[in-house]
Amino acid sequence: MQERAQDGNLAGKWTGLMFHQRDFTGWVANFDKATAAVTPASALAAARKYFDPAKLTIAIGADPGKLSKP
Image (cartoon, rainbow, N blue to C red):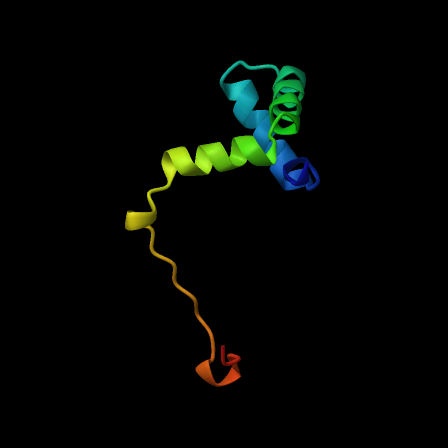
C-alpha cells in the first residue's frame, strides 16, 4: 500500500497505533484483507449509499482556451 511506502507515513501510522495500544501487524493484516475484498460492485454500492447526486458539486479548474470543443 502507498501509505506504507514512505518512512514518514509508516512511522506516523505506527506511532498512532502504539499510542492507542493497537498492534501494527494486526492492523496491516486487517487493512490488506479489507481492501482486497473491495470489488467494483461493492465500491459502486457504497457510492450509491453515501453520495447524493442532487447534492454533488463538481468543480473543474482549467484554462478555457485549452479546452476542446464538444
